[in-house]
Image (cartoon, rainbow, N blue to C red; front, side, top):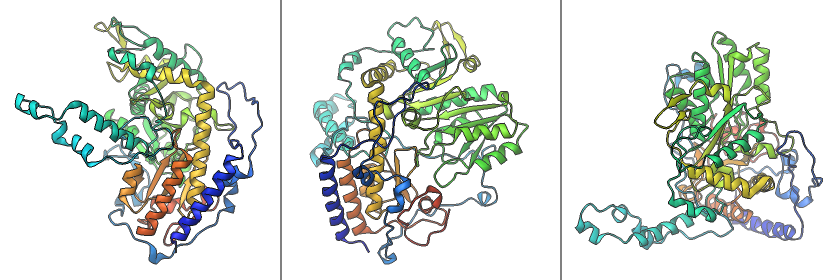
Length: 557
């Protein structure tokens, strides 16, 4: 049974590791590929020191992990998480949304802030005085002169709000937002109403826009994903969801009678698009690591050969960061003799499609393969004070949704009419300032630090997993909701996850793990909610390597 001795042991381990790190230059385990698919040269040969092996343990060395058992008497069972399994699911594992329009996909609640979150400092929670300034009564907008006279001063309210955001940003672990950015040079442009209404490539009569910057951003991503000039179209969206809505709309217009196939761990926006566009959709079961079950996908496509195939490929699922194998999906289509004109592939790359081109020997997501569109979020990996995204598609498909609008003196090709020109400017600025080398550094930091977190959790006796192509560490859900809210962990039933972004440091991870240990000492460990719960699936051997087993009897998923 775990005691405070475990916490003290972890602290001693941290001190020894920090001493070693300070005197050793850690080299990345991930060699980086040039953005150009034609070059794979590197100026330095990757080297892994013994310290790196200890701090960033990959699956190939996971066999050295010590598997810890826990006294069941020390465990508190979480109530209220027992999942309801629909009767039809027991008969047919494929959810058919032709008639069942219930909410589907994996939830991804929005964080309540986008702010500066860099550095190791953790700011104190809001004090009662500041909390009172942000109460419903305090922020209420006066509707009479009497109310105005008694209203709280706006400067005091905003000062308290700044303190709130500063505190919450410093313990931001559960959602994929890069809070390490500085756009002070762009503040001067906030006084302008920059609107990129209409198509980014067809200027309208409205002159206060940032189209030149938007087109530059689109060109960058077109080059990143290897599609030739003249063959692509795209725009800066309000978020990754809008990019998915646009990508699935193009698919529906190209194949009005097609069936949309996507995994059950897909982001909820894909099935939202199917409902919006009244499309038939099938939610395919997943493997324990979060990838789509390829055999079931093949069987479903084969059973519906009379209908065109529309597939959403996940380049990093919401909860586990799993990457669907695009090449394997293409082989399935080839083996089933599905002709190119009968299938359409959209790639939801919200976070990792921005990172994958910089990880050596990673699968290529490229328009040189028969894919049709890609959508990513801009505020996640790059960092931006407002949600935004980018979508790129084959130009031939966009013609199917294009309409001339005389009022704009442009064409209507986007989901939104008026579009935030500030977002395009901020994305352009981030790409110019970071450059290729800056993005590479961020990717290396995220991948290495995620391995550090996974090893720290495992060494401390927690169930934790990390997919190969991911910076999302999945772990057993803490028993204390206060800790979950403090660190803003994203949870799904009996698991939680941490998305390691450029602003997440090892120092913060050490503090987080110590608090987890204290939480376990006080409340115990999470017990799987059911046999096939997400927590039990973390123990499945298909992940590879050793893992600290969840509490209770393990049944292979």
